[in-house]
Amino acid sequence: SFDVLVIGGGPAGSAAAIYAARKGIRTGIVAERFGGQVMDTLGIENFISVSHTEGPKLVQALEQHVKSYEVDIMNLQRANALRKTANGIEVELANGAVLNSKSVILSTGARWREMNVPGEQEYRNKGVAYCPHCDGPLFKGKRVAVIGGGNSGVEAAIDLAGLVSHVTLIEFDSQLRADAVLQVKLASLPNVTVIKSALTKEVLGDGSKVNGLRYQDRISNEEHAIELEGIFVQIGLLPNTEWLKGAVELSPRGEVMVDAKGETSVPGIFAAGDCTTVPYKQIIIAMGEGAKASLGAFDYLIRHSVS
Ligand code: FAD
Image (cartoon, rainbow, N blue to C red):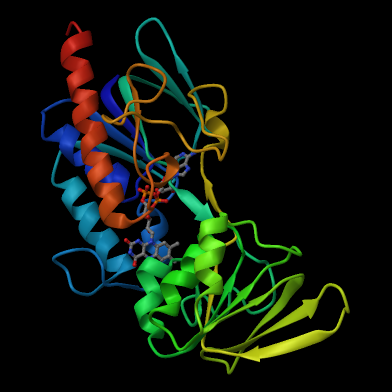
């Protein structure tokens, strides 16, 4: 049985495990894929104190750091269910095993909703991007599109308009869904074009990078192509929390609700990183939140456990 069992092996889970292990308590990590979203990232330039690194390289460093402590790493294992019992918390894995722990830290991250159009996968990291805070500066002076007219799409378009030469915002619906104040700001920007009732059909490229986008006007059914160098997909970030429904309180978006110490609605169960309600999904934030949730769990243990 563990004192702290971390579910998820991305930046949040790694930080949580290191902080727990440094307290000399029994620590485990269950991860479907150690490294999480960082494994899918090419250049990282906003991990403060490291001016440039690459995802797999950062994951290797994370893994080395975790392994320098006594942490039981259960990689390639998926957690399926969680329940509080009289003695602690039970976590059931997809392979049928049941793990017991006095406290649990949920750090299962999130995934970007994709457009599912031809070219999207091929040109991922070659012009197709999902995070304006991460990749915006790569498109300085270039032309980009933002797909999605909700709050995150409109925020991304406003943000990018200050860096790139031109932004085309493409919305499927006949109107934007972002807050009015954001729409007013967007409309005031000279280098932004908004196209509504448009269905993105294809990411175009020259074989090595994006050079355009094809969309269909949903009213006339006509197809159009736009020349550009980058496409930011902003149609939703989905937390990996489907398996937690009913076990801990989730927000309407499915994010795990946490308090200032990272504790969920269930005492002894903490959460950190992209799977939670904490705003701004970034590596450095996930790590800080992981450390915080782990200290929260330690605090819980010294108050609640007898041995
Ligand atoms: P994740 O990294 O998503 O890790 C989640 C972990 O949980 C994984 O190990 C996963 O396998 C595991 N898991 C999920 N479900 C289960 C389950 N049921 N059972 C067991 N394990 C499970 N941020 C930056 O700061 N800078 C960047 O440059 C940057 N670039 C990015 C580029 C891309 C393409 C993407 C996708 C993201 C980028 N981000 C960047 C965002 C950053 O990667 C995330 O904010 C960060 O990884 C979140 O960390 P996390 O630990 O909360 O979750």
